[in-house]
Structure formats: structure tokens, C-alpha cells
Length: 487
Image (cartoon, rainbow, N blue to C red; front, side):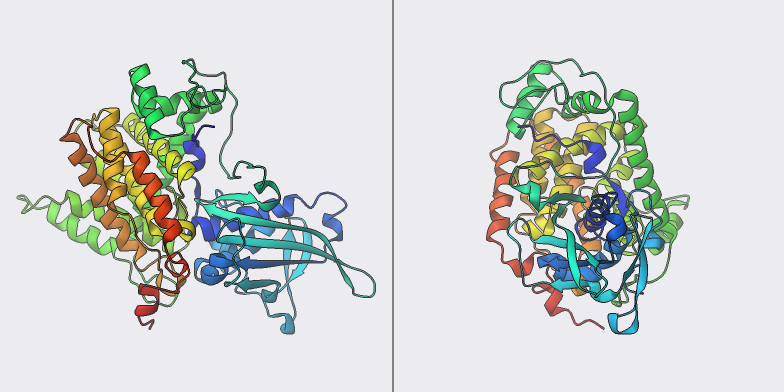
């Protein structure tokens, strides 16, 4: 079975502050509302939801209940107004004070209160630490409730979701993103993973991916493009990649000019505009005192993650908590690498997606499942490999860059202070962006030969995530979350 995940799904345009705690639950609620078909939707008198595990532990700080109410109302993370999501649940009355209303599926008015969403942080369902169960209820004339439908969903990272009822059969993750049919791209078939018209060049490991590159005499981005074009067609693929980059670019631009304090009560100031002003002042001098490329790289990453923390428009890359790394490195490429081009950005995104597919298939991109190594470590590996590729690296150098980046994030915990994607997440993205550039440059100095393979490091990350104590995996029960005094 191929590890391939389309870049148009892996890089999903959504909203902050979390892909697993905001985007995924919104998609789950939207899917649930869609399953209430004609005859059932009209009978619904109440909706309830239970948030389990990590969703229950840090859901309020991540805006999970707001996202659920918005999803029930038919809003989609990829095109909704972020302002319409903020406060969708938190402004509802308690049950004792009456009820608000949600237009279920965008049409059926149903009473809803804050108490219709409950939290069970110490109950972990077997499918994934991020779990939620939605119930639809009807009332008879005597006021007795009967259940019409219930579904349990797992938010598995990056905005991807699974329904528990399909989980045993290994169903593919559900996610937003464009789809288009097209004739399969030409190319040889390999026996290591089943080739289909949708995935003519399948791979399940970096070793298989490198073997494909050698057989074809092409780079990782070319293998990814062949699979993408078989799924979407060239025109739709390029339009989708350009839309992803436009959203990433807008996120950086907005973050660089928006001052203020981030929501949530920690009083964290937005630093990206201040850094931009300092760098602009330095760079406009007739004689520059220093190279500011690394500082700009940091500013780009800060800008994205401050936008994310404020609940703004952001691209999961591959998650929201790690969303600043890939856009920051891509902006670094465009601004500071001679010969950089829009086509280079497309190749950058394709290469990053090829690497991210391997991580998602063979380990995890979920902080609740693997700690921050699964989010920031994965994004750093994707960015490092992608930069190495557009700088002219061979496939083996690209694989080496991704391996270097991930190897030095092994064991990284996820311990957000106050359950917010702010501390240490924002600065962590800036530092990881620097690591990605360093890993790419270091790999280019070699010939691609190295002792530890990317496959080995991905498997090590998976094992490390299993061994990591639960309190260090997006629960706010350990690490900085309990050692930083919230003011």
C-alpha cells in the first residue's frame, strides 16, 4: 500500500489555532451533520458531544468546542470566515440559563447550550488520543429523548479525521481539499506497493522512493508530481499548489503587519511586526552591518504562528502547531536564493509532501500521539528536504537533509502552556526553520551517503512517541505547562 498523500490534502487551508483540535473537530462535526439525512435531520431536537483524551484536556484553549458548533452549522475550515468560528460555543448560555440555536447542516434550527459539549480528559479511546463522540437526539411529546445517531471520530493530526465505525477496516482518513480526475501519468510499475492509475509510482518507504528516483532518473518532486497528476491532472494540481502557496504567503504578510496581544489570557505579544520593523530599518541602510537572512527566516515563522494562535487563516503544514516552518523556509528560498522561482515553490511543496507522506504513513504527525517531534520534527524534515531539493540536491541528499532535521527533534515533547498554541510553540517554529536550513546546507556538503536512514529515524520517532509519557503529549499536564506560572 502506498504512503502517498496528496499535497492538496497534506497542506490544507484552514484556520487556527490547531489542525488536530480545531480543523479536525470542525470537519468531524460537518461530516456528522451531513450524515443526518432527509427524514432524520428534521427530527433532531438536540446535539451533544463528548471530547475525550487530549481534545478534552486542551480543547478549550485550542477552540475545539467553537469549531464543533461551527462545523455543525455547516462551516468548512478551508473557506469559512475565521471570525465566525471564534465564540461559536463560548458565547452560548449554560443549560440553566436557556439555550442558543445552531442551524444544523445550515438549515435545521436546533437548541444548543454550552453544556451540550462535555469534556472527558482522562478517558482515552483506543483508536487515538484525540477522540470525540457526537450524538443526535429526538424528543417525544413527553420530553423523553431517544438517540437518532451517534458517531465517534478520531482527529489524527493535520486536520485528517477517521470515523471509528470505519477504523477497523483501515479506511482512509477524511480531509478537505480539491479533487479532480485525470488520466494516469505514464511511468513504470513497481511490485513493492500496488500501482494503480491513481498512484502510478507508489512507495511505502524512503528506500522505495529513492529506488524510484534512481530508476526514473528524476527527483522526489517528479515522483510526487506523477502521482499528483494521475489524481488531479496537471492544471488542477498547479492551481491547487498555487492556492496553497498564496494562502501561506498571505499568512506571512498578515502576521508581519498585525500588532497586538494574542488571545487566551497569557498576554503574549505579537513579535513578528516588531522584528519586521527592525529588519526593514537595517536593510534600508546604505551599508548593512550584517546578513539578516536568518532573522528574516525567524520573522516569517513567527508571523505564521502568531496568525495561527490568533485563530486566523493558516495552512496546515503538516499541522497548525508546526505551520510556520515550511512557509518560512519557502519565503527564505524566494527572498535569498538566486534563481528562485514560482515553479521552484511548486517543487518545494511537492518534495515536502512526499516526505510528509512517509512520516504520516509510518509514524505520526499528531502531537497528541507522538509529542511535538511528530509535528515540529516532521515539518522541519519536510522543509529541509524540500529546500535541499530546490537548491539542486540529489534525491539522496534530499533524504539526508530530511533525516538530519528529524533526528535532532527526537523526543521533543508537546507541553503547551495553558493549552494554547503559543508557548513554546511559536518560538519553536522559528528555531526549527533555522534547523531546516542548516540541515539542507549540511546535506548539500555531502554526497548523500550517511549512516542513519530517514526510514530508521521515522521508525525511531514512532517508537519514541509510544514510549513518551502521556502527560508530555498535548495534555498540558507536564513540562512547561505545569512549570510556567500563568498570569
